[in-house]
Image (cartoon, rainbow, N blue to C red; front, side, top):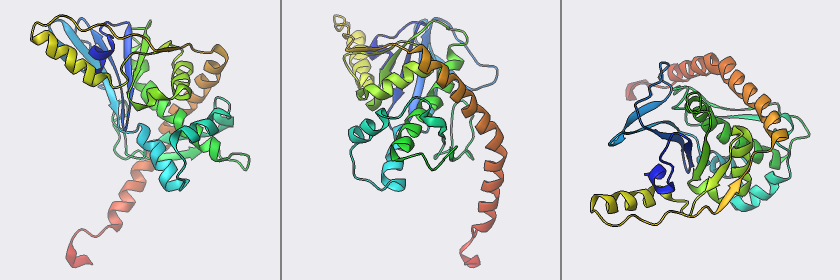
Length: 260
């Protein structure tokens, strides 16, 4: 529905949605499966198929940071203003956003969050930006798999994160793709309207206007390329530790009321 609602209905248009969770999707004219089973493929309609993947960790990670770690009542726009003053790559600070485990592309329920590279020079603003960048790294790790067979794409942004110009620009810079916001941020609802009108043989709904366009910056993309490689390496280095840690926790938890 999000793809239909934005008009992103061909293999050159990717929709990235970030709300509580996140997802990346492309509509193709034939089934495309991933031998490594990192992404999904299912029938949309007629000769259209959806390929993509979903992540557990979207804006909920930023909400967790604000409420639990920072314990602040500052609004998200206020936190975005702080993060805007921090350079791309967050002065070396990196975050793994897997506070809820992860679905695509790693499929690891044991995965956990992790700040890496903290120094005395890092501030609250760094923590906020590191989390924003991490959420983008997570959804881009899905998107880059889709782009292996669809290299020339524009990205349509939907969901609550599309209200943040900074977050949109980070997505453009990380992916090195143009990012567009159409007339309806909540495009899944718009897609349902379009599909309903089509099924009732009503006249086509007017196309959404493009409200904003965010072009990638080459210099920031080079920084993010290095950070993203580190992001992927860091998970690979820690994934066995995550599993070992989960085993320890399970052994310490009573399995029956009698053991209490």
